[in-house]
Amino acid sequence: MEDNSGLSHDEQYSTAVTVEDFRANIAEVEQRISAAVERAGRDRSEIELLPVSKTVPQERIRAAVAAGCHKLGENKVQEAHRKSEEMADLDIDWAVIGHLQSNKAKFVAQFAAEFQALDRLKVARALDRRLQSEGRSLDVYVQVNTSAEESKFGMPPEELVGFLKELRSFETLKVQGLMTLAIFSSDVERVRPCFQTLRTLRDRALETDPELIGHGRLSMGMSGDFEVAIEEGANCVRVGQAIFGKRALPDSHYWPENG
Ligand SMILES: *Cc1c(COP(=O)(O)O)cnc(C)c1O
Figure (cartoon, rainbow, N blue to C red):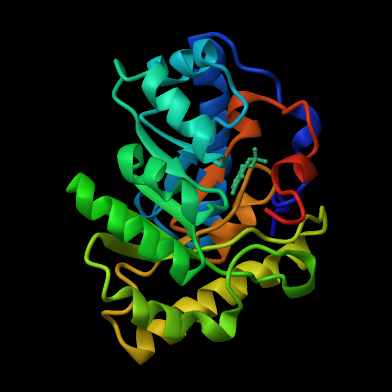
């Protein structure tokens, strides 16, 4: 089997500025997706490509939108909220994909179409209360920690089913599935088990009760590892640098120890 799933693509991520740059980068990502879809015997339509625009300024985001991006992921709620106001003239669905403190739930309830990092009841409660007063609902993914010692994000796998049961009482939260961040490693075979864990948890939750987990979608895989995630069943891949270009700061800046 051809090995296209090496993880060290980051050296070649060029910064996209113009609409043409974005078209070219997206086409390259689509080629990588197609190759993985083919290897896995899956269908392209099962997988959503979510472009992640964190740190990217408005002018470049506008070019990305002109190139066809209409849903964007942001990991910091205030940055996302600001951008949603700056670009209110555009047709963009905003997905908040990073850790949220319950005191910032009101922002998410105001503008986000989706929240992918739900991992605590306190946040679910705060979101539900704010969404009710806004008269809105929100698509959510429950974030699970699939790398135990390596990460402080997401809920422990053993608490997942209990948490999903509690979420049923929040009518404004529409559970779509599960999300994870794999460990940060350039070694495919250390990353793959995180994705496999998420898939197994999804399958078990479906067995426990098919109504527990919405469509049972899996959000996993980023610029460096989305092929592996697709091979392991991803339904949403969150891709930043391969579309927008290399970020100036290392990943540790975006996922600080204490969120
Ligand atoms: C930044 C980010 C991504 C995308 O990472 P890239 O390396 O830019 O593809 C995916 N998921 C989350 C939660 C992120 O914060």
